Length: 134
Length: 188
Ligand SMILES: Nc1nc2c(ncn2[C@@H]2O[C@H](COP(=O)(O)OP(=O)(O)OP(=O)(O)O)[C@@H](O)[C@H]2O)c(=O)[nH]1
Ligand SMILES: [Mg+2]
Image 1: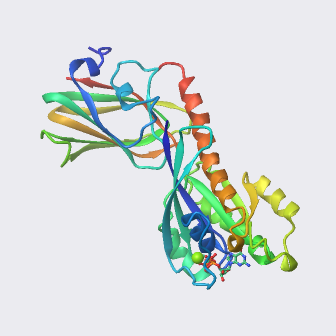
Image 2 (image 1 turned 90 degrees about the vertical axis):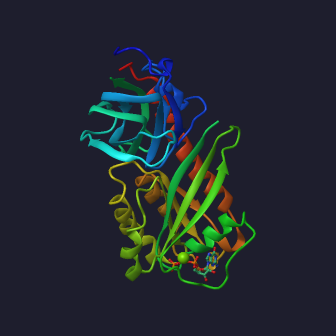
Image 3 (image 1 turned 180 degrees about the vertical axis):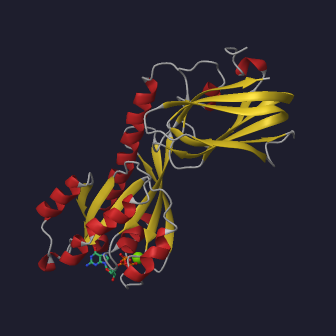
């Protein structure tokens, strides 16, 4: 389970606040940690992923570079709107570090997850992989 | 192709010509405001700059902030975290140049430890007879602060394009550098 790619299981990125054509948000879900989505300036930055159906989630891991503070919201609707806050985490280190955020969702259900990066250790941050434990 | 976004702080003493520069940027060099009207808060201007020889562009969110001492504190609350700095002084006022280090300190307090590239700008280069600040001295100080030095005359719309492009380029090269670093990370 740990290394399967979310993209191949019908999960999609439906919104991303930044975009470099060469580093599209789909890279977050391709299971490959070498490929990434990169923000292109200013905070906050966000992306939203959609599950094929209402899904029970036990935990979410996010593989990032230079992300300082990350917030997760979710909803159970068909639309990517009206989110409720789930959890947030800040990591206290310095710039230039690969950071893994692990969020326990304790089996709560969602159709969308929204990831909001409120601060970074640099002007630009990257997200390499999101993984979900069911 | 990528579109970058940068929050560019435009600061410096009162009456050095920040708003005049901002108007020239906004009007693509067709408009100079002759009558002084003091900025009392912050004014936001969005300007998109294409990086030559690429498909890339930088959207600059320029924050023109009041220079008058008594207004600065209130304005600072609206600065946010800057991506770029444009620090302006008046070439005909030694005092406005001397105050630049204080402006630098103020800005640093908002940078959350990030390196913020940008420019030091000596404005009013048209008034050469009343010049009080030598280019070499300003240049040297700019270098010590990691800023590029430019001289402009908002009144004559001189060098304003070059300044704008240099700000955009500074952010664009930072992006390219960081992208390269990320590309070369060992897989996690
Ligand atoms: N000769 C000359 N005068 C200029 C130039 N740029 C601006 N001025 C004049 O300087 C005065 C002040 O310009 P502003 O742009 O309002 O100054 P500011 O830095 O925005 O001042 P605050 O809003 O008080 O912080 C105005 O009378 C302008 O016409 C220039 O390049 N040459
Ligand atoms: Mg002004």
